[in-house]
Amino acid sequence: MLDLNFIRQNPTQVKQACQAKQLDDQVVDQLLTIDQRWRQLIQQTEQIRQQINQNAADIKKIVSQSQPPPSDKIEHGRQLKQQLKDLEPELKELETRLEELSLQIPNLPASDVPVGTNENDNQVIKTWGEKPAFDFQPQHHDQLMTKLDWLDSKRGVKVAGFRGYFLKNQAVLLEQALLQHALNLMIKHDFTPMTVPVLVKPKTLMGTGFFPWGQEDHYNTQDNKVLIGTAEVPLTSYYMDEVLNHKDLPIKMAGISSCFRREVGDRGRDTRGLVRVHQFNKVEQVVLTVANETATQQWHQKMLGFAEELLQSLALPYQVVLMCTGDMGAGQRKKYDLETWFPAQNKYRETHSCSYFNDFQARRLNIRYQAKDGSLKHVYTLNNTVAATPRLLAAVIENYQQKDGSIKIPAVLQKLIGTNSVAVA
Image 1 (cartoon, one colour):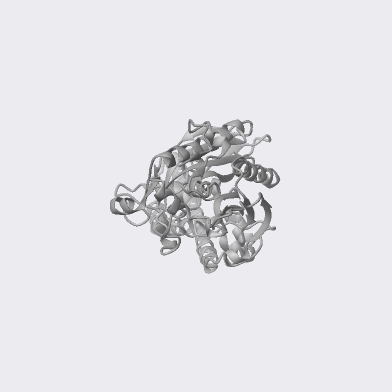
Image 2 (cartoon, rainbow, N blue to C red):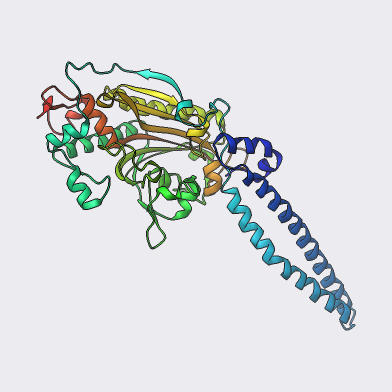
């Protein structure tokens, strides 16, 4: 959420942000129109309250002189209270509408974010690692896993429906090893490891900026709870409605959880394999820091570096992509994607996203801290994927496949899965 005073003073800039993120900029005019009427009513109600107080003081003064309260002033006081009562419903309605419209206004992209409409306008800023050179035609991960009895998509669909799957045998061990390796990495960097609720209140999705824009991509329950699509939601909401101290910052949290996404906007896309599924597991990193964009940008680079460290430890080739305005979320100020190489698909695929928000999420969640000067400020928030499986698992399998159809186990994971063998047949 943007500061209302900022929107009032910079309507053109806010409209440009809406346009850059391909959102309706008319919401800005609607908000400012309602805001103007709301402020008029606030001023009007304050004037009426002052008149009520003055009228009551006049009556009290007369009564203190042992005189009966004048009927005209009693009637005037009654009329003033009725005027105030008549204004309250409209004022309440305007306040509700003002909040609704404020939640529909996106964050402003940072100055170095490229303006664009879709993924074709994103910028590759770094490439790391050598793509594996096979002396055979590499196979798709689902083909390899099915032959090894690591994956059962047929029964997964029978039991769970479209995009359902069962992981089996060594694939389960390998997936768990990836998650443990990711969690160990974050612990090494002094992040607090946490499990999180996967069923949360809608206000946490609204607070983190996934609602109102992404409601259709989430699963809702009958008791008004929502299944999370990322641990970012409960982790960022952890200090909702609390006041921290500047000494507490930065706060570094690493959450491990199952995640759920309906993938409504991607129906018919990536229907093969494990790249796009409804249920997956993830380790997520979240940082709350001071209200300083330079410090936030430094953390943004650090968190990106942690994700790169994970991919480099697995010797997986990847590229870093700076997202354009039209391909980033409404709440994000700046976003990088890490795209890992998938040999059988002959392309890089997104496996990590790294974003910062300034106070956009903290305003919605009401997370503040007492600064060194004693003032109250909203924290700045950041998040980044550490590892998301089975997508990352699929990347490992495609990059580590052998000519005989076996999978070489990355050296960094061998100890975690309890074997020193270099391949699993």
